[in-house]
Image 1 (tube, rainbow, N blue to C red):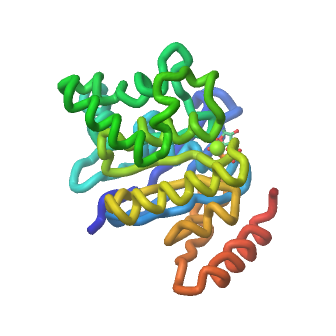
Image 2 (cartoon, rainbow, N blue to C red):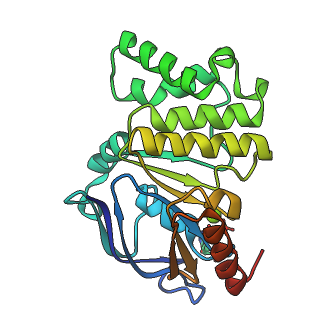
Length: 250
Ligand SMILES: Nc1ncnc2c1ncn2[C@@H]1O[C@H](COP(=O)(O)OP(=O)(O)OP(=O)(O)O)[C@@H](O)[C@H]1O
Ligand SMILES: [Mg+2]
């Protein structure tokens, strides 16, 4: 079942009068099915974060529309958008974006508290998700008191606690060592398989990408290519490297 549909999405940065306008996305169209784990790859500056921010309603497209289910998200007003984002979107950022003045537990509970859940329900949900992610022991600590991997897992908990329909992750393993990175990828795979969560993950890392079922390659704000993972992981890995080397960059 289709969960997201993007129609000719463009994003132009800079003011119209200004000659320094830049077209970061050029009429991108694609569809995402429920339960898909999609990788988004491409050179630095190709438009990956721009795309994710638009899909997560952090930013608005200059032109084009996108739908989640049969709802036209681009037609929502500010208040509706805030509600939509709260209920349907889980964001995981490269630099975690945890609030430094709150404990991990408070950070994780925040989206539930904002949407007015009962304290007892929240406690239960937080306990369950923290256990799943293996951060029960550090829940009362502040972000600066725990490791990067623990911060990222807390950020993942915060993104997942509302059972969002779609999880958007922008280089979630970018700041992690290989062990923590692998843990996070396994976790995303688990959430994808167990809860049928739909995930879009931007990554530069071929190893991270090999966890996905499909890779969307972006070049200069356009979709350049799509690759599907078959039964043969090694083949998928190699074809990702092939496309990456054609695209150039890192
Ligand atoms: N707020 C902004 N104002 C003007 N130009 C911007 C802005 N944000 C991004 N850009 C430009 O748009 C293009 C796409 O940026 P974007 O952040 O989406 O790239 P990216 O693919 O995420 O790159 P990276 O891999 O380095 O994170 C870049 O050329 C960038 O300089
Ligand atoms: Mg980016």
